[in-house]
Amino acid sequence: MSQKRSIFEDVSDSGDRQKAPAGAVGVIDRHRKGARRGIRAWLAVLFAMVVVMIVVGGLTRLTDSGLSITEWRPVTGALPPMNEAAWQAEFEKYRQIDQWRIDNQWMQLADFKEIYWWEWGHRQIGRVIGLVWALGFAGFALARRLPAGWAARLLFIGVLGGVQGAIGWWMVSSGVTSGQEVTSVASYRLAVHLGLAFVILGFIGWYILLLGRPERELLQARRGKEPRLFALSTGLMHMALLQILLGALVAGIDAGRSFVDWPLMAGQLFPPEAFSLTPGWINFIENAGLVQFMHRVWGYLLLAFAVAVWLAGRKSAHAATRLAFNALIAAVALQLVLGIVTVLYAAQVHVAITHQLVAVLVWSLILRARFLAHYPLKRSIREG
Image (cartoon, rainbow, N blue to C red; front, side, top):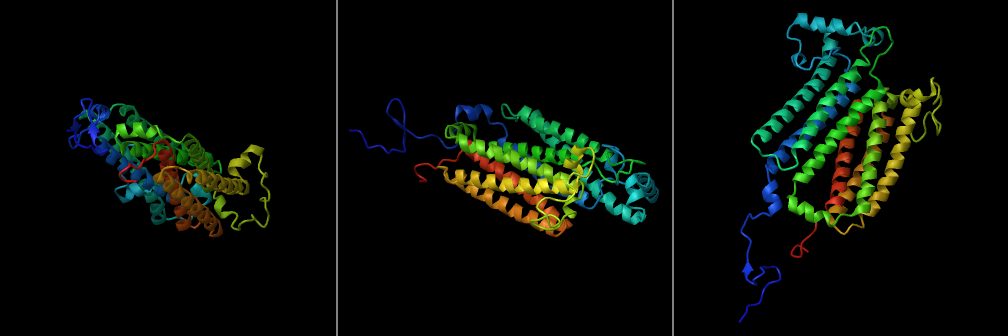
């Protein structure tokens, strides 16, 4: 006489009940396992370091420290000046550029050291990130613990990091001038530099999310993908990246300190002399009024679209996805408030850097919401 079966029991073709041994994995995971947990932890460290890099880079810009080191020495530059003569030599190099001649002739050596340490620290973090990536990638590769298909992805992160270092010097070199009346880096180069930092952060974050679940689970989850919600969140991600680039343009020309009223600008809906520079196109990257106006308006549009995406996210069949979009809209609203406060306080350092840090939070939450729209977390019958 056959016994009653539980609907949760696995049934073989022969009709016999079988229980999967603890820790059993599918064919996909068995062949692609690698050191997923270890790689994920390594990427999490890199993610945190890139966030620190972004914050220190923002502080370097806000303190006008970025031009204090006038040479690009990727290896030998890792060591700061070790004695008074070396400090004097570095200070003398700085005194040859326009920024010192026009803005900072009041500086003594002690003042120079303060801005030097900010820029040196920013570059040093970049070197450490490169070292952590290289050691981690080499270690996992030599141990043959890279999951199938992941070598190219992880190598790509390293390549982007190298490109970022070169772009960093390309940016700094635009301000290391003599006799050209230039006292800061080119704002569009700063935007490229910051934009690539967020792109790198995005790839690392996406890979961390992918490695957080087994391959078989990702394949199953993909069947429940919500295409419309994924497309909307992808659009929001691109809008957010453009807003980050506009924010970099604002920072590059100190536009945040030029108009400190809100919602108007110098008492007007549209800033005065918005097209005062020639040629006309240069106003879009160097006119403080027009650049801040673009940043404000795009922020309003971003919020409006984020609300639309959130309303779509609320209709998701998956609780985790709905929660992710709730967190996203809360962060976007907070960022808008911080943007207004940054304007009203003339981009004071602590307010402006908080605004930049919350941009990282918004970016991360957009990535997570987008990921869950693509790979939803389903609740099992037992959980439900």
